[in-house]
Image (cartoon, rainbow, N blue to C red; front, top):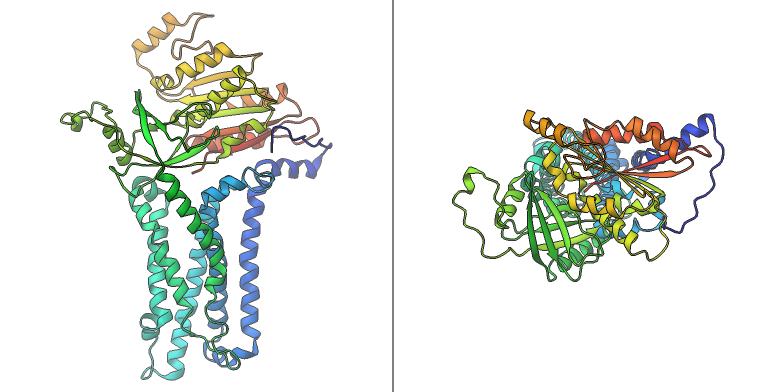
Length: 532
């Protein structure tokens, strides 16, 4: 949706039509995609199973294997289909490109990783069906020819299909188990390297069907030979080109120009890369070969496209971020930092991206609500800077006419990260364009509370943030906030953008759905969440 699109006039709706319209604002598109995916899997399995059960060219094998033949082969066909889809979901350059087109109105491209996970679990299911069916097939072959001639164990481990199947299954098992969220977040390196077993997985699949295990009674006895490559080749070529582009782009001239250590274990890194062109709300992947040569970590940009550098804010919470911050010369008072010498130079880094995210769409709405929790405020720093540049240097029509910025922090020191930016925006505020709401959820010491009470005078700057806007204590009441917005902006599409923890995301998402009213003069709250 561009800034110049004309929004279609809404019609008056009631009853079930209104419920469906409300549902289609946030939930409908992703549920439709999921339903189509599941329906395609089931339909293809049923069609393949029936074809294999009725075809006259497989009478002999059906007599020996019974229902195991069509079950194993039909599941294999669905595996081929899902493998053809799964690589497209991680082609970040392609997704960033198509999400800027009209298709982004109908297809939730920002849910690509969610779809990737759904496809992976579908592959787990069909792999289980395929393996179990073949275990019965191997047993039936053994019973038919006699154990003295051929055993089920030999078919399972020593035959071409059996041996490649074992390799594929082990590789896939390791990929799936290391990718579950509890493992991925705590042991990212294990996830990163184990997930590259996809090379073994796809290589095994290319060979798995090449042994002519199921032979036809007449005609082409190998029934056309291996089929997997026919499904997989298009996505494989796209993904190969994707990786080539990433490697070339990542190795273009890049250097760190400035490092700023902020409170609350946060580091700002400013990077110069002349070949990098960004848009507000995008994210990049960064690699520091000195720390880990093959690890790329995602961070949202905090710089504006109008600045001559790109910047990221890194919360130091894991092994990689800790090592990177120390290499940059940051010290946080830890015991093991005592013997560390200050660096004499800044490390070489590589940048991949930028890539599109939900926050890119902020300028496509008349009203935007930006909600950041802690370090989740980073994508909105870029957007707020861009808003400031557009206010002070207007170059054309902008659809966006009102912005609500809500920042939720548990540590009052975190508000210092972007205090100067927010203060500048308050000073430049034109006709109430921006409203800033800060919320402090963490506790404070008694002397801190006394200091706030003594310095918090009506009409003066806030004692915590130094802004004119007051700081609220506790979590925001989104029901109350959205109720007020619905009264202030009737008949308006409001984009709600969030970056932060799942718990807060869930409550915000529900509030968007609860207060959406897709009637003629109703307000619709479109929810978007950062998702790497």
